[in-house]
Length: 544
Image (cartoon, rainbow, N blue to C red; front, top):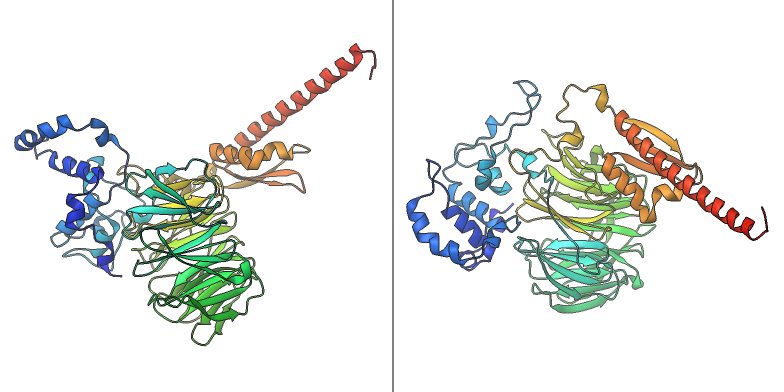
């Protein structure tokens, strides 16, 4: 991975940057001296500036990566690695709790890229992947008259986030203070995907009507193509040299295109149903596709032949993703499984079980090779760490990151932010925890090393009778809110008319009490209405 791709902005952009960067400069200049008191020279030089500028600027909530990036670059050559001093639970020193630095060190937090480098005296092969578990909810965005967010992507450099919704509209958000910037119409039908070229000069988008559009970095339309017989185009991806790109759609085909001539070169046929995902190998002439026929196929785009077929999943393959090392292939499916393959030996390395619903999105971390994130149909966000020092269990879990399915997720190019778009019409930004907090770690039982029976996960059922719709609520709002409040997993079996509950014994008891109270309230309301109708008929002498 080229470190130049993640460098901070140029000196001109730093000098003439936005107010957030100026705010970071002021906080850096006003830093206290060794005795805990501000420097006199600093106060004398900045009194007029502080008095003339509004104070609300300093209180704006933001995740500004420019200052940490500058700190990384200025100290990278002189800093020794301190990774060996990290206390790990269950290590040679025993099962210690997770130790974190004091909150005063917040201003010295570096970027994930700087921590991988190691500096002088460090081991470049030893990393701390837990820095990539972004469990802190930095911001929630929702545009006016919004619709479900189908896809999203960071602009080149990571300054802004671009989202595409179900109405075919672009929405542009600031990547630093998360403010709304622009909304414009792009497609006549719902967005399906968007992909930047590797040289970051062009953007490709597709919709549910079989239309592909080229865009410049300034979001100006360049070219429009119609393909896949008017069927939805589910995925797009560029070749390593950006001279070709590949598309897949609901017409059960994978198509290879020439970028410069805007023409279709090759049609890859072999899937028996809708092709839901496709991705080009990061360095080789190999294309991977996943379909509704439960198969994952590897193609040679030069000859159009199928190189291999993977039969690991038992339901629709929703996403495929190549690791940047070019050896690992990640696949996600509606069978609630995520599988990792080593294409050098064409064998399955591991099968990851952590989602309780369909897996709808996956994304490798741009810096840490063994870390990736996944999103589910029920809105669950999970971080995984695989490899020699990893595990097949979820490294960190956010059970109710969204209220509905997470359709797409993208890491910031530097790796310190994760953006997720969901069917609940919200776009959320996830950041690293502030020092001293353990948000997102408690759900995995990391603080309960004794494995007590109070935290054992149990399964229970509750009869609903004719009140199935009442428990589900409008568009699932009631059951989603109850899951969020009780931190349990619930599913309504409409055929058997029972509520299935997964959680600890105390959580299951709370859920049964709340659902029971809800059903009693509904029954009493129905009885009152029935009695009122009977009294009305009796008043007019009809009787019952």
